[in-house]
Image (cartoon, rainbow, N blue to C red; front, side, top):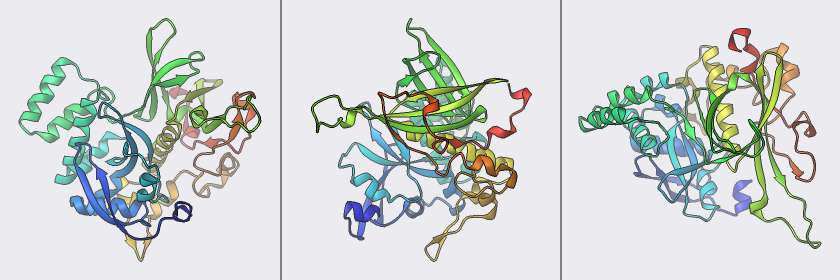
Length: 367
């Protein structure tokens, strides 16, 4: 359907994929190759072993003026990466290879192999340079010393102890928490969304929302009603994307928190992958099993992952969970509504919500 919409014939092309250190990997693929095909081609070019491919993903990013990247989304399995990036007709959009897990204990698996270690090291250096990982003067001196000695494993081990290691940082946006219109920088990592909020009095406050306390979330796009002459339509810049999640603030109080950001879909994908990873760990599965080579053109996945994948993506394996599975039939529900109407959490139907299966195990000790 994507190829037909974009009217792109199936042919061999060269696709450029960025690494965190700015190096470019050129792979020869078909325009009809899906994300997993392209990921395999990049891994093969880099000599990354098959059992480590599942630890990495391809991301669509937009290059900013300072050389950093703004994340648009993780490329989904059904996407055609070549079409996704070329259809935007803008050289600022790139495809980048990064690790795709949240728990830093998985770093040990990746560091076992030379190529995995190099990719992880390059990403860690890049995140420190762009200020995603916080470093004080003494830590910076230690890191510099390890870098000069080319002690990559020790460099990563030290980085793991630093604040925001393994987090994805998002562009500044707006939230309604703790009050409406607060400017915030959101980071995703460590099974939480971290907020650095700038309050109206210019104070900066920090807080975290654990994914295990989010009962559900949704993404909506709001299109303002046209008040102009008939036939006028809202400009693209006026469309707002929002991610809202219902959070267990205290034992008996759930509250909706809304983030207004062009990166709302990427935020939702981060929440989804955190939940998936929690469920994989809970069942005793491993990331090594989360990716299988294609055989006869079909991607084979292990039974263990099928059983633990979040039920909104698959049928629920547990009959007792079935009523909750109806909260969402999609990964991310996107609905259109006018801003002139109420934008509260209550004006959207139950089918727009994405239920969180990591939420149900919460106990009093978590509060």
